[in-house]
Length: 251
Image (tube, rainbow, N blue to C red; front, side, top):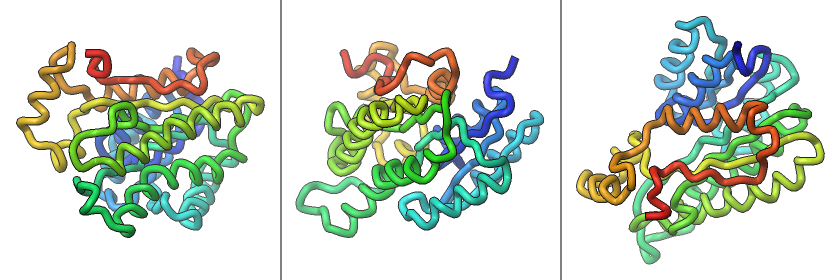
């Protein structure tokens, strides 16, 4: 039986890697999925095609979720396609963009990182919350970096994810009386383009070796956790930040 039959899910940054895995897995469980993207147009189209290949429903919507006006357009297109109720909201959009030390930071880079990783989460939730009712679930993507400060040159990324972690707890308190649960997932090293672009192979090998399970994680493993947090199986879970890092935080 499909967990999410008749439900609508919105996944920001749904065109590749973890976002794509989440979109596909929610659709496999019966949700109609809005695959948001900004620059990953091809990836979003491929995600929708994959969902449609097994009879699922999905649309790809371009929107810069660091811009409130653009978020409102995303909401309008969601309502037009699937109606005035959203049951699952996944704030996955984000990025590191570059590794910079303190003395290499500038205001423009600060705004980029904080806006894409944290401002987007705040205002996507603000815009979509009126469409969400009793039993709805919001899942934010934080990071192991929120716990340990991140790797070299990722101070702003780690800080933006720390803000996401704290905001998740705050919103669980605020939205809980409305029947909306808010949780976050904090991945460790997941085998994605993110690390292909920004983490050297030798560092990935070292980190995987320090992980008790001795490997990197997979995007589908993160998606499975999203499915749990979006479902009624987690109906008494809110305000939690779930580590998914192979035990790295405790090694």
